[in-house]
Image 1 (tube, rainbow, N blue to C red):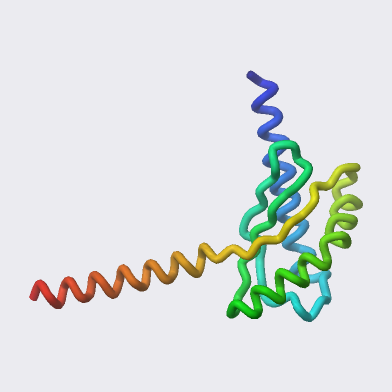
Image 2 (image 1 turned 30 degrees about the vertical axis):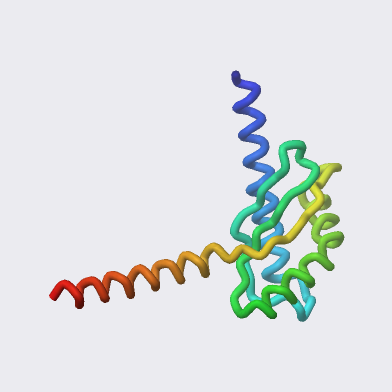
Length: 125
């Protein structure tokens, strides 16, 4: 039983470190003009640790999201090599960047629910 807890703890530490390091690189070190204003929302590590999905929330429209994803995908090798140096490990997972639209969808659902509640109040009066 303790071994599983140790594995889970190690996995969570690796995920947290990946998220923090990638976020730092996106904010200040990547100079690709395609990369817009964005931040890392989540990193999902595959069970074997060979690959990771990096969910990125981008401010702007769909064109900005697509260009940001292209810029991040182009910078994958640089990001992996920098993480390898900073963490001091041999194996870094293969990174895939995914646009995270959950915040926008949540805001839209909240807006629609607010409108519905207002309509119900008006109809009830």
